[in-house]
Image (cartoon, rainbow, N blue to C red; front, top):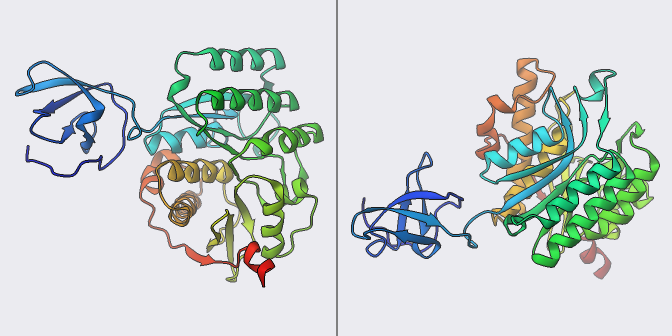
Length: 351
């Protein structure tokens, strides 16, 4: 093992029992239980045994270690939507996930009628109470909510986010307000109202599609300028809007707005994509933000990853996202994405 002079980790990770060599000699030790091995600073390690020999060390939670993400959404037996998509993406990128289902379905409703089991209000509240009281809440760095089985679940999610923020004020909450599409609302209006009134005010990030943003803001969204204005009015400091209006013919776009940026990520439109792309995008973008990437880079990688997976699934003729075959598209996407910087609403008002 050669000496390494850098101080901080080349790649973040969370492991419990690892192998290291001579931490006094090496400011960073190499950990061998991942392939490829990665590096962490010695000051995150508790060393046991003779430090001059190969030794056992225990990784201590620190800022260099990614925390867990609680993902709250639907669960399907077959397919890659809801929690099935989000959990796979986050775990592929190295994040421990606590997965809380809101409903249980054999498959996505778009494939035809099926049994639907909604976690009852009492059971859902009890699970949330257990999570709030659990001794592991210090591990949680972010919460991502998606499809909800009823308005009562929105109140429970809000209670969970509030409780976690009392322990960790820096908790990141991403709300994917899964309420409908161009065909209209596909959840009861009471559920949509609860998401709007209870969850969006708590969110650091929201990821609606264009229809959902229009319904939530009460405004028609016929231009990207209108989308930006609606996103600005809704509340969360970061808004990622899917199905935005592209500038290139035959394309589709994801529009992102924060206090610093107004960005449009465009890629070629693929007809009849499998379900679950919104769930996947929300998880990928959240993971990239947690990784510490710039907003522009996070948007580029998340958009490219989803586009690449859609293209590969369609090429195979699959009726679901083939995540298990395309994990590399999540971690190192190669698809072409056109990034554009738009005029920020604040700049427009200053003119």
